[in-house]
Image 1 (tube, rainbow, N blue to C red):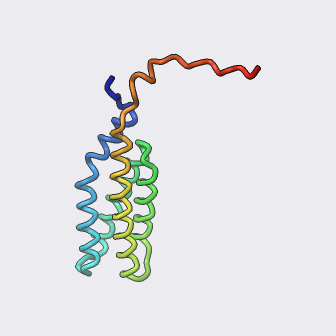
Image 2 (image 1 turned 90 degrees about the vertical axis):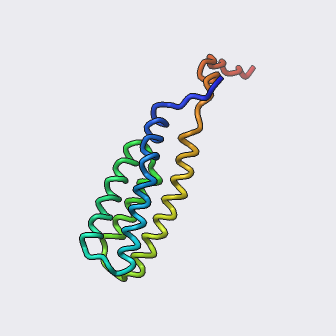
Image 3 (image 1 turned 135 degrees about the horizontal axis):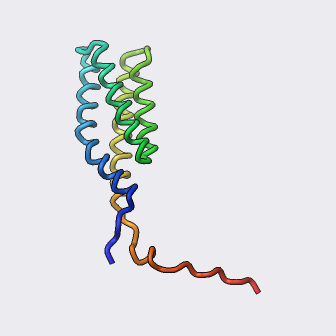
Amino acid sequence: MADKLTARQQSQLALLRTLQPRFEQMHRLIEEIAGLRADDSVVRRLCRLLDATRAAADGVGLNAMAETMGVMGTMARRGGGMQMKIQGLRDGLRSLKINFEGAVREASTGTPQDDAEKPAEPPASAS
């Protein structure tokens, strides 16, 4: 029989479909900050994007991605060396893309329908 996706997997896939354009936007904002063409409004925009996406990912159970976005948001907000901040944000975006591929693979793998219909076997008695 065909594999069937759970409601959680369907909601995860719905969110994952919206993440590619957000990743591209994050990349553009990070590179704008790296080119020293950005003011505080660009950094705030990146932080808002990260926070909104983190909340959405956390809501559907994509905890690894939500954690990475939270770290990236903290890194973007804090002071310190610009090169360190940019390198950390770039590394975080690479990590997000890797987590994205794994999340798509996991959410796309359906649960076998035959296994759900089988009754549970009683445990063997130790005699």
